[in-house]
Image (tube, rainbow, N blue to C red; front, side, top):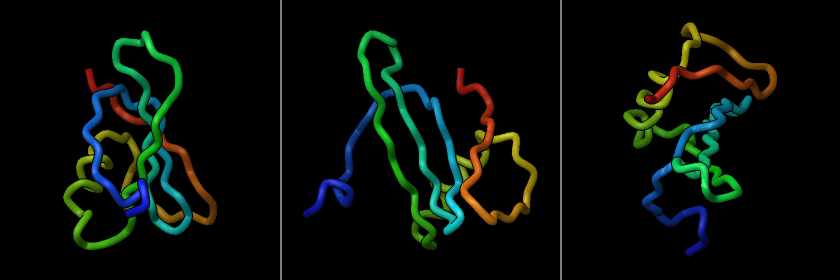
Length: 81
């Protein structure tokens, strides 16, 4: 099974959130303690089975809905602390 189709449990701080023009959501995580370098990216695709997770992510944002995209768009998100 390709690594992008496996489930992983992570603890981290969300440092980036982008909605692609195709509707996929990309999330960038960094080590929550700040002691490790690097980031991890996750993708939430457009599909009915991901609606609950997508809604949770959109609840982090200050974006007004509905919105449309012609190109990928980054969004500010509310602090999770």
